[in-house]
Image (cartoon, rainbow, N blue to C red; front, side, top):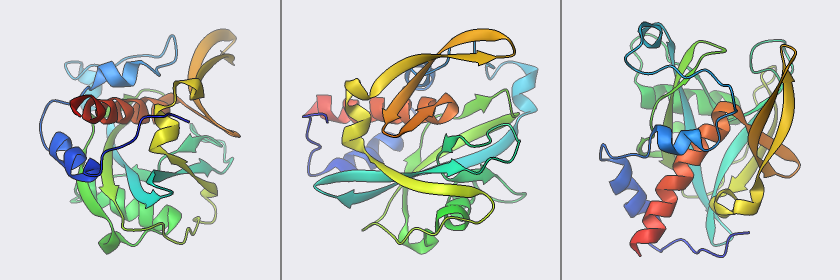
Length: 217
C-alpha cells in the first residue's frame, strides 16, 4: 500500500485538473501499454472509423481513501471476453460521453445515475483489437452503492483503491502468447485480479493525474 496520503480537498483538485485540456494523455497510457500493441493516432483515417464508447471511474470514499469499481466480464468469446474492465460500453446515437458512461455503469453494476457527480474526462483511448474509441469519465459518489452485476455480461464486481493504484509494487509484467507470438504485458496486480490492456492504460493515466495533485501539495 502506498504511504502517500490524498489531500482533504482531493475531489475539488481532481475536478479542477479534469476541467482543463492539460491531461497526461498518451504519456500516462503508454506506461501500461503491452509491447507490440498497435497505436492509432488522431491523424490516421482509422481513428475516425472507431466506434465511440465510454467507461466510468466511479470514486467513492471508504477507509479514509477513495475506491472505484472494476468488473470481470463473462466468458462469451468476444474480443474482451473474461477480462477485467471499467463499467462502460458503446455510446448510443444522440448520447453524450458522460451520459453513456453513467447509463452503462447503472446497467452493469447498479449505480444510480443521479447519485454520481461527473468530475470530468480523461484522454480518449483507441482499442484496435475491438475497433472502439474509449472515452473515460471520472465521477464521484457519496458512498459505496449496493453492487448489482448485470446477468450475462458481468461475472464479478470488485473494488480497488486509489492507494492501490499508486503503489508501485502492484505494477508488474508477464509474458503472454498472442497469435503464436510472445509479448511482454504490464499489468496492475490487484490480487487476485490482473488488470491489463486498455483498462490498465486508462487507470495509469488517472494515476498520473493523482500524482500531479500530490506533487502540488
